[in-house]
Amino acid sequence: MNFKVELDEFYMDDDSEDLESELKKHIINSVVYEIFKRIETRVKSEIIKAVEDQITATVGTTIQNYCTDYIKNGTMNSHYKETLVKDRVEQKIKQVIDTNSSYDQIKTIGKKIADELKIRYDRVFAQSLIISMQKAGLLKENSIATLLDDGSRKNEMQKGLGAK
Image (cartoon, rainbow, N blue to C red; front, side, top):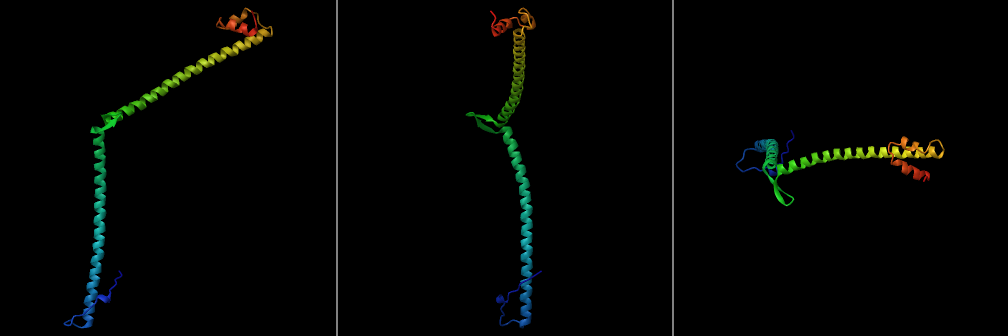
């Protein structure tokens, strides 16, 4: 430990003992004062740390309990009316669930549309192939309806061939 003793504050009374004993007393008093000062500072910092830790734990628990209680029983303004927080949370959860089921519905509808477009593409390709074969003279005119499942397509193909 390092101690600093300032002799500026040293003084002797007229009825004091000799200089040596007065200096010893002054040094001892200064050292004891310095030790108590350091102990006091250390004790204060330990107490402050312990209190801060306790307050942090207590405040955290208190805030958690308050938030839980508020969610259970608190109210909030939603769409210009006062509703319970838990009801609003339930409503939002249901919206998320409904959104996911809407996504599944959209996915199903998209698959149906894709399947329909594939069928249409297959029909157009078949029609184009039959028209090309007929133009090349590889098919008889009555065989068009037989090749296509749908007899109504025969008129469309004949228009494509320029038939009457």
